[in-house]
Length: 258
Length: 144
Length: 106
Image (cartoon, rainbow over all chains, first blue to last red; front, side, top):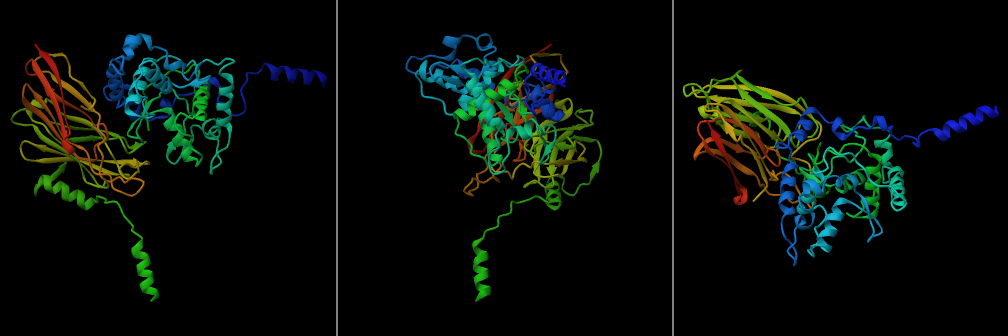
């Protein structure tokens, strides 16, 4: 009896730290895999992918001089194809000045204010989306790799708590759909696993490119929960958790989704 | 008195129904293009996915068999729907310089319905193809 | 000008059928949607798209609100001579856009 208990304890200790309901690493699939062939074809061809329009605009904005010093992103960062490679894959990242993680859009806005001394770009504005799309594009094909250390861990756990917490009038947690019911259908659409590999992305429903924060707000609204304001710490913590959860998966930004 | 009150109460409620094409208005729109000429199924190939994830952007391809010579070519291709708010989708004008009669675009579908493509040939004849599409998330009528 | 992405082959053989693809940023507002206050959002669409080859129109499309936002169109044309292929979009509210590409035909 005692031996069985020790063995059981050992097995438990040695088992990978997966919580109940978590998707096993080997079973993780991108939202791309849940789409039909026509939507996938739209994403695969850069000349047909509507998100390319934002990437093109972002490329132009990268070289545009703004602010009193007349400084462009390119003046500090040079060619984005080299300097921005891998950047989107590691955001949200810890920002010492703010003592918390910030996402890619916030990083671009911060540079705009601090380094270019230019007016901030509004959340979900065309310019911010274009720059985000252009930067994210440079990480296409690379594995997601956010840094979890003593500084970011508390925010990861806060994000995880949000993911697991039942919310809203429908009293649903993200986990219930995206960990437990993925692959099943909700109102005619397949429930994906909710890995943010493709952001910012062109959502057919929006008829426009949008950020992960926009999508999260849409989901929260869908379960009739409080939709945090753009840039709210709750959203960024959740973004951090989702990116960590998708760690190692390939970025396919800017993607197309239904 | 009660009836009048009821009528007033109803008048305060405005039920707006979005305009909808019907098979009849689609026929009317087709007639505007073909006139009295008959439309024969054939020569035209309309490709649409049988089930779409979102009606906002549905890829469609229309091809018409034709040598595309000066003597024998496709002048135009017209696409119509039955149940969108308006029946016309797109009209493309080709000619012998097209090389091939083939056009590809993306359309909106407001409901599960039939889409019709009509090819107009240089000899004045009209040919057609139809495709049925199932739409679970409609376009046109969703709020922004 | 709105963002536009076109694909025209850089070179082709004389008489070859080439494919041209065009994507342009535009909401293609149908005129059927309403704001949350119930006001109708007016129609605002691209109405025509043309392709000119060294000045001669070789393709034209008339678009209606049923064409999806950020319209994409792909079509073919015969590579007849070297020169310039010009794509033009025009629509409601004075919308106008042009993109050109050079082609070498041997």
